Length: 202
Image (cartoon, rainbow, N blue to C red; front, side, top):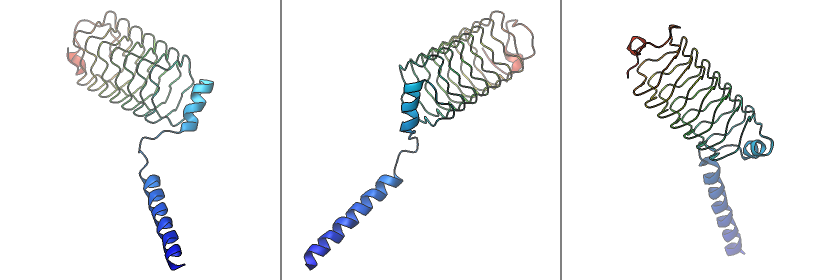
């Protein structure tokens, strides 16, 4: 009987340790599976926790994601035309090759996000945070980035024809080989071939 009770006690101890390790070592970027499923089923998940979620290649046209937490999420090659991402947190998210034409992303946080080759034509990013974002070879034609912070962002090789950058912060932003034809600059004037006056370089 002593051996049996001792064995039961040992098994209970092992189970307790296992559960403790499982509980306290969950990935810090784990997203809510219920929120993830809800988005895919309804195309709406305002304010959801999708931290680190893999949504690459997803079809999310005109999805409702305002205020969602998409920190570190993978949205590469996703179809997000007309998506609503106002006030969403996309810090460090991968949006490379994503289709974001006419997206509503005002007040969104995109610091350190990857937007390489993304299509943001006509997107609205008023007062958005793009500090340190990588947006090489992206399409920002006719996008509105009024009041946005583009400090240290890399836009090399991107197209920004007819973009609106009124009151935007361009400090240390890279505009090398960027097409800024008829772009409206931070001082509300049309682009005249120089971005250095705004603290950026090309």
